[in-house]
Length: 409
Image (cartoon, rainbow, N blue to C red; front, side):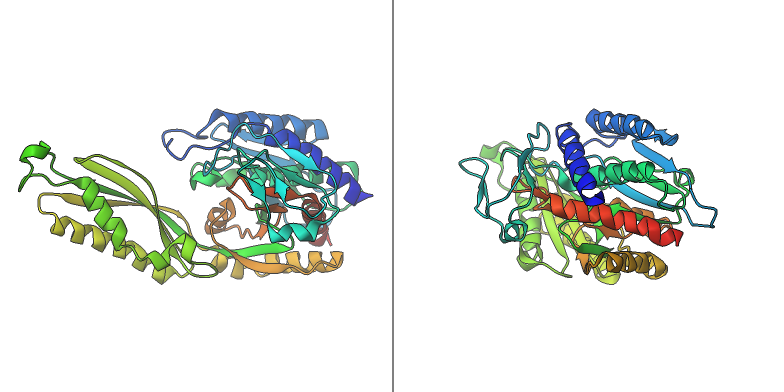
C-alpha cells in the first residue's frame, strides 16, 4: 500500500539525513551556503534524484538544487513546486545528531538524558505509532529534514507509478533557511513553477498561509573607555548603555510573553566591553504598519539612549528578512483551494494556522510565486525536546501526492 511504502521510505531517508551535519551559521555573511555540510546533503540529494530516474537537475553552487519531473499527461497543466531546506538551526547543537526510533509509543514520558525528558501532551495523539527522537544533547532536525525525506519519498513513489497523472513537478532544496538568508542568492529564472508549497511545517493537519514580517536590527553602542580609577566625568560605559536600551524594551512584547498574532522584540547575541557593545534585536509582527512602527521605535530608542549618555553613541542597522506572505497567497486563491480539495479527498480536515516565524516560501511569495506551508509531523522545533511523528509525516506525503493529482485533473 502507498501509505506503508511512504512511511517506511520516509523513515529510512530521514534517519540518513538527520545524521549529516548541516547546522547553518548566521555569523557567516560572505558566502553561501554558510556551512559545507549543507552542500554534502545537497550532493547526496542530487545523486538520489538521478537514481530515481530524474534527469533534469539544476545544482547551483550557492546552495540550491532543483530536480524536475517532466509532465506525463497531454493536458495543459501548470508546473508546480515543492520546497524544503537542508540546514538545521543553531539554537541548540544541531550537529552530531543521533536519532532514535520508538517503534510503538506507549504513552509514557520519553527520557532522553537525566536532564531531558519529553513530556509533551501532544505525544498522547501518537499512542502505538512510530516516533523519532534525538539523544537529548542536540535537536533532531525534523525542521526541515522531515520535509526533505517526504519530498524524496513522494518523488520515488511517483516515478514508480507513472499511471498517476501529473504536470511538471519541481523539487526544490535550499540552504541557510534558518539564518533568514536562504533565498538571498536564489535565481528565479531557474524556476518553472507557477505555484509552490514548502514542506516546513509542524504537526498534522496544520497548514499555513500567513507569517510574520521579519527584520534583524543590529544595535551598536559606542562608549568612551578610561581607567576605572580616573573614570569620573570621563568614561562612558557602552555595556551600561546596551543594558539601558534592552531594559527599555517592553517585556510583555517578547517571544516568551506572546502567541497567536502578537508581535515581539527579541534580544539575542550581546557582545562587548566598555568601548563598544553590540547586540541584535529580532523584530516580528503580522501587521505591516505595526512592523514599521517597531523598527521606528528601535531607531528612536537608539537616539534617546545616545542623548542620555553624553559622549556615547548608539546606531542601528536594519536587515529585512521576509514579509508576510498572506497578500501574495490571497491574490492566488487556487493555491489554497488545491490544499483543501486535496485534503478533502483524503478525508483530512486541515487546520489553518499563522506561522510565528517564516519560511523560504515567504520569500518566494514575495517574488511572485504563492507558496503556503504544509505540515511535516515535527514537534518542538529548535530544541532538545524535538520529535517526529511518522504517521503525520506519512499523511503529509499523501497530501503532496494528492496535490499533484489535483493540478492534473
